[in-house]
Length: 276
Image: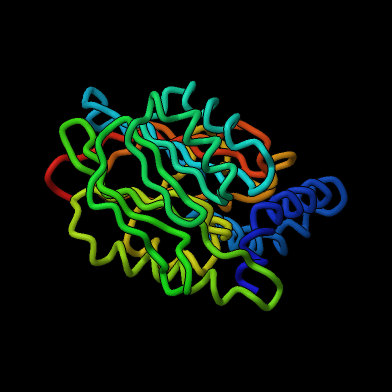
């Protein structure tokens, strides 16, 4: 119920707005009745509301991290990779990769992004050297996540990429297990700066994101939107998330690339050297 409610929560605001307009026209006394549900909606949506770019350390070196679920067997991984590279990204994370799409993306990115690591359905390409690469199962019997240390300018940052298990009615145990697992992983990560990106299969207000929200800062969109990423043809929910620690967000938006049913997230950060 929490997962379903989180997905429809932003759209309840439109229903409340319509009721307010009707009340203004027909019976203003109804506005008093609408006050409580409106206040409850505002409180519920507040953690997922748009944010603002940080004004801190804007003269420091920045890195741009992009992430997209490229949809297995869509044939669009190479196009996604090329377009994301053309955006000037420093780190490219792709999820829901099959064998052919991983090969296509690797061939597209190898020249500009010589450092890479792939496991299962996820992969990362970087302009900067990588170290301490690790596959992660996050409680499952197969690998759908990874962790690497990126040697970014003036600082190292631990980057996690995850492809959470899908959610079906009555079948969300594997996804919840992975979300708890990623929260446990970052809680014990000694890296001063951490970035977690990927397809979480959980809308921004989903209670299942509570454990990782308690460990890291959820990156709010800074483009004035709610940053919806799925489905790409008419985005209705943000299920592709970004979390950080020890970093300042200079910008966070989404972009349409490739043939996927997900938009890509684009996040520009400054890394705080030496301290979380």
